[in-house]
Amino acid sequence: MRAEELISEIIPPLKYKETGEKALNWMNEFRVSHLPVVKGNQYIGLISENDVYDMPNPAMRLDECFVNLPNPFIYSNRHAYELMKMIADLKITVVPILDENNEYMGCTDLLFLMSQITAVISIKEPGGILVFVMNTHDYSLTQIARIVEENNAKILSSYITSVPDSTEIEVTIKINTLDLDRIIATFTRYDYTIKETYSKGSFQDDLKRRYDELMNYLNM
Image 1 (cartoon, rainbow, N blue to C red):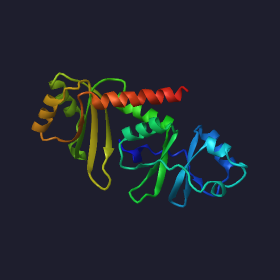
Image 2 (cartoon, one colour):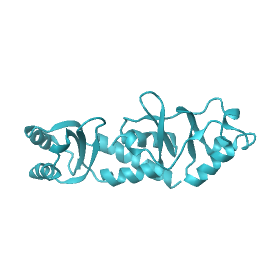
Image 3 (cartoon, rainbow, N blue to C red):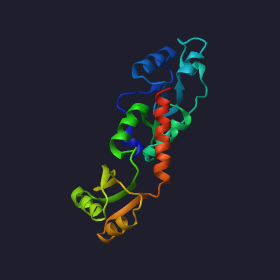
């Protein structure tokens, strides 16, 4: 799951000429503590509640008070895992998402991100992850599940993402085992193209740790 697929349609960016009052009103309305600031399609930075409270007067415009704002962001093609890491590391509630030309595309917020992540990857369950690339007409979850089950394993979750400007899709499955060698060998024998694998615990352990950090952050 890439960052561009997690853009929230709810939270708009603040224009650089908006006031601190409007920033606080929007933060309250959308239940976040940060908002992206833009000038046209240019991403200026991320403003926080504390930044606004430090303004001499919240009725002033942002561009009158902030020459430089912190500018954390993530590119649209990065994995959702990196979004989780950024939120946990920086303790931010919104992550701006930019395209390859460094233009602002949108943002994702903490609660929306967590609802999507927990729904699709069974994050609390131990297991390995396989990512396939295939043509749409070749996709059959029934056959994929049969191959997994022939190797005495089960699919915990799965999701599909489309490849832009292509008839290909990426199919991600999470399996209830970290020992993927035999399963990978079987899929290879059936001519499946495996793009990525995550197994042997290190990815899963770090992903679980980041998830727990985010849950702790939400409960603060």
